[in-house]
Length: 102
Image 1: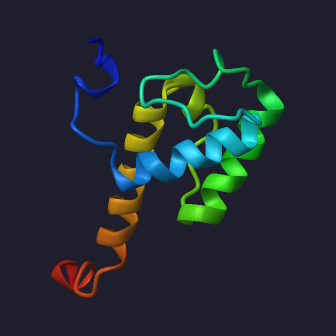
Image 2: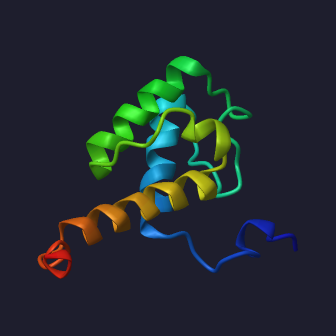
C-alpha cells in the first residue's frame, strides 16, 4: 500500500485544505490536489496564477509578493508561505507590538 501523500504529515493543515479547494476551483480540476502537487504541473499558467493570488487575498487577506508561486509551486510550499504571512500580520497587529519600542 503506497501512501506517500501522508508520509510527511498525518493530515493537511487548515490552510492546505482551503488552498486545495482554491487550486481546484482556479485550475478547474475535478479533484482536490495533494499537498505535494505542483500548480504548474496541474495546468497552471500566468493567468491562473494571478487568479489564485486574488483568491488567496480574498480568502486569507494575505497579499503575497509577486513570484511567490514560482518559488513555492507546491500546495504545501505555498500554504506555508500563506501561513507565515498570516502569522507575521497577526504579530504586527497585536497590541503592544509597537509599545515596546516607545
